[in-house]
Image (cartoon, rainbow, N blue to C red; front, side, top):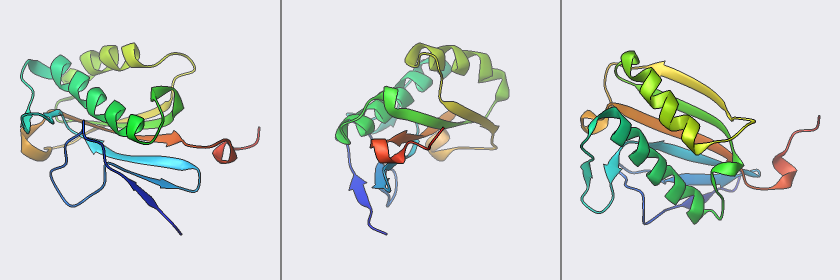
Length: 133
């Protein structure tokens, strides 16, 4: 299987991985934490600011693949405190329109660099990836 790596200047990496990979008509984006790519540090301002930064990072990776949030079909959100769910959900809803992507939200013990949230996405990169109805 051939895979094409996506690296976005507006997203940060804290390990040996690509921001995303294009394979078989889909773009699989690595989870993005709320790291400001210009400072290399987590954003401050609570869960609202952290979720917004995750979306900035993910949007940068999508743009590097020639896509936008409109191409997203699946998201996984990871929260270290499920009491942040309502705030994460409200910010999430600002970034998508109906029909919304499928989503799973998972409570986890911890995330890299002390982040409170991490979000990953899968997007459709070509019409060949759209399943038949």
